[in-house]
Image (cartoon, rainbow, N blue to C red; front, side):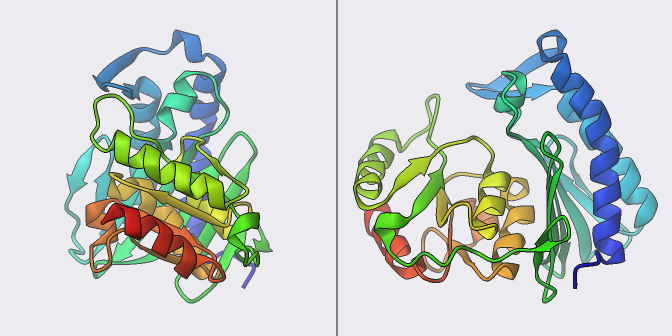
Length: 265
């Protein structure tokens, strides 16, 4: 299936409409009104405006769906078992510093299971999308995870604890071990795009702790539909609720997960 389904088209149309003003704001980033939610955690007028457009367009297309949104929180829908999960700008800090690496992430959850996801990178006009049992795609091109099987050749991505968040010392020790066993580790600042890049074979794997459900919902189903694996960092945990995950192609997943989980325990 290279033709998007109606559900994917709804997400695509909403993301593209929202991105028009988002890209205008990105061009005028120094003039944005910005408030701080906490150390290193920013919210901008662009975040709010993008989310409002996404909410309006998605509600118009599927009026019965509920919403879980980064800025707007939870809105119950008529269909209690279906909801949109939205991150209006994943990579807000990049956006506010003029770094062209951020995305809009949208997912659909039905009966507490992810059934569709989209990650739109407006600067490069790349739409990563997937629907359960239908495969994963970049625009109209089928995606498959990388086939690299040797950890020494693997390029990985992660997120680094910042501000006063706990776990910095443990993370630094883990990072040192991983870097010694791989071709490198990248920290680019958008969890949704990190997952999308695993699906596209640009990274072999990705791990991060203490994320929110909207950071990872859209990207995680794209990885699995591209043939990869996504699991909680701690075996038996809840990936979406716990916000800590590991993703990789099938060739390195077990080795990669073992390295991370041994030091996470």
